[in-house]
Length: 246
Image (tube, rainbow, N blue to C red; front, side, top):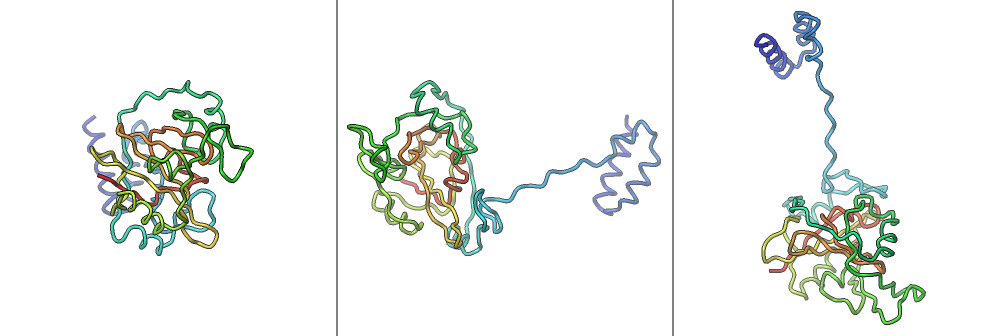
């Protein structure tokens, strides 16, 4: 057993320092047939690019995230920190009809079944046929501000959302730290690159005290999901900015 360990270590050192396949082959020949199987190098799975790395393409896009976008959003600082909260209990029985509608949406491939419907759909102001009697329409941005009586949408650019959130006491964080912090309210702003290469805001989610997130899905239901990437995908893209309020 000791001989096997010593020979295996020799092969690792030889392969790393010398980079020689010939050295590896020579050492392999010297081992008995029963020991050769353990010398076959394991295939490594290449790491995926970061959503904030030049060349990254969000699903559904034809153009990669550009260096100019990085300069605008990161300003020399970069932190992509996803939370790992203690898994809460989600009530999967509430609003079964609403739940079915959300489950059939193709914009959220990461969502799966781990979400809770916390409020029913309201309809969209642009589609009167979707309105429900006595129900006021509000969207994801309104919800992050605690508004449930009307639709809020300041524009397309991150700068326009900066102005909106600043009016409500939020400040755009220097990094994208999405971990829960006691006494800090966080909002994640999502975005996609359009066909011209411009970055446009698409959605916002609010972090709750237990570390989970809530999202109002347009005119559809409001849901609670475990992590911000649960609603990332071809519909909303990825989180591009984080706003904090203490």
